[in-house]
Length: 386
Image (cartoon, rainbow, N blue to C red; front, side):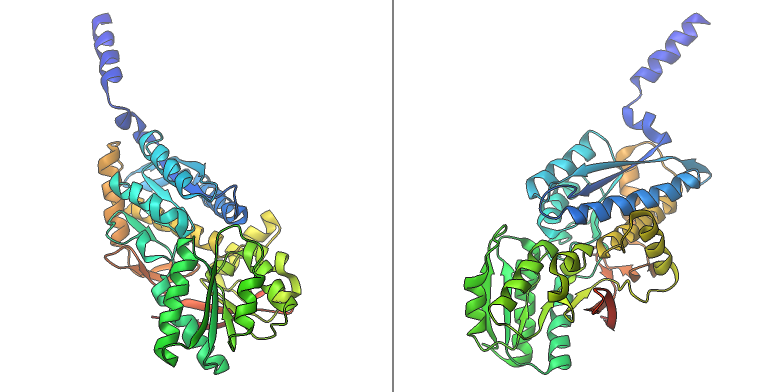
């Protein structure tokens, strides 16, 4: 009997760590908890914790005839590309997560996506709209529309809504997201109005805080509208400085404006302005309304699009895990199963809209144009679908 116990103990010691980990499902969260856009990280973390609370209340995720507890491994990418890469590498190689949610912004998601794909670990970025995030990366997905779609949406909206023919653009040349979207907008605008109709295409570098030189050129360019696809911490500075210099024409933004901090930092200067985004909180119904009310009750403010997209991304991950039918404990095999099932998801009813994944890991879904009301709320203005 004693010899039998010794043999069994030796067998357990020899088992690979992956096989012993089959009793728990680990999901990685790669988010900017600190850095330039901490509100993005906060929304990510809060939405993830809400989702995990529901999973725990249900006892775990049921896969086949077994229920597995879930652990979240949250890593701070500091809003830096190199930190996002390190976070993914750690979670994949040390924590042995089965799937990663995040990073959010394209500056971190593009390089982090390369790591995930190289390690054959499924990753879904809720908020990264840059095409390079998923391009030629079968293990990388996103939960939002792409910039090649968003750019024309905005160009068409401004043209139809205001009848303008001359536009100006101000963007961060050192960041993947605004740089890419600025170029897609310019292409779409000039397709509508001809070469040279973007009369000012001005850039700056991350962490710049004085935009007076670029804005002076824009003021003198004859532009009828200013498009600036920047993050909430920069939007307030740009809008305020533009108004101080005498700009009294529309300023239009993109989904990076969707943070709760945008209006808090910008104040009345941003009232009446438009931007494209993933969902509108004001006037929401059904499951979207329920999520907003629950989040607001717990955290004291209306969730931004990052939080809503993170919620959807985690539910997509959950669905893919459930579709596997079994979690074997073989990390490589389980990651492949989750990846394959994410690619099969069709007509998923998210709180940010219905989505079906393409072969490239991108969802087919609508964009929303919202208006910042005189109360500082993001009001639904119109929906634009592919």
